[in-house]
Length: 159
Image (cartoon, rainbow, N blue to C red; front, side, top):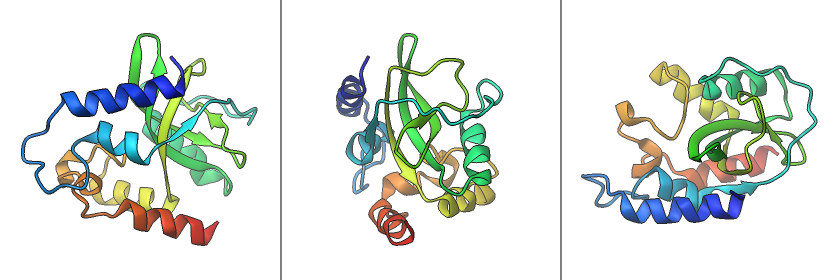
């Protein structure tokens, strides 16, 4: 499945899955957020990195970008084995995927780049890795409480 097909999967899933109580939200669900704000990534970086533990993609990606100034944290959906999975990875300076968890590169990635400081703040506040699926915090990115466009501008100004 290509990145374009992953994006189409997200659009289709967004229409099919309705979260209760989302009237007035900026995005109807996680699929909608990533479909609208995500970027397609297709190429694997040759950045030297030892994979982190399985099923710890959010922590693995955060760990890598914490140690390297020019590595960025990305969260979204990537295709592996049978269907697109909620996942986190990093990108290098050229925007190429650094797969921090899976043994082999997925075939399609669509994800949202987040400022490192925002990720650190959310992890510190919630005690859990991942930024988008913050149900215990009532999904601040999906509701619009945390404005992604503002975060995006912040990233552009610090780049």
